Image (cartoon, rainbow, N blue to C red; front, side):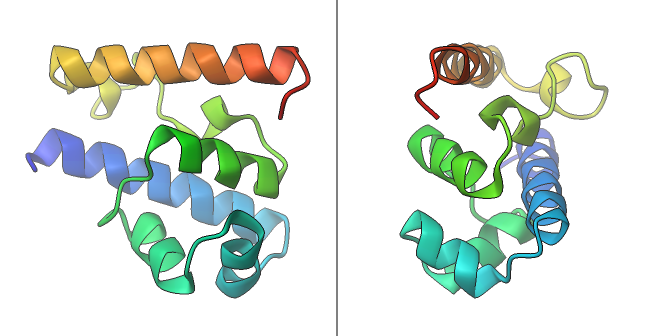
Length: 107
């Protein structure tokens, strides 16, 4: 994992943690609501574990936020803007799909 990817994952973790704290959930309760372990929540929040797209959507749903809110924008310096093209494309695709699901009331 390179520095850009590490920074990107760390930013996702910060956003997950901030949303969790805002909703007053413990890591344990968030883990139960998403089918993850508390250790996975800890790892995601610390940026050492990147959640796959379906887990990101589960996390967002449990936290009451849009999945895109957990992703750094592609235009944010030091985050997605410097990702390799294949990862930037994946982030853009995930954000778009998540927005469509929210719009369609699926999340």
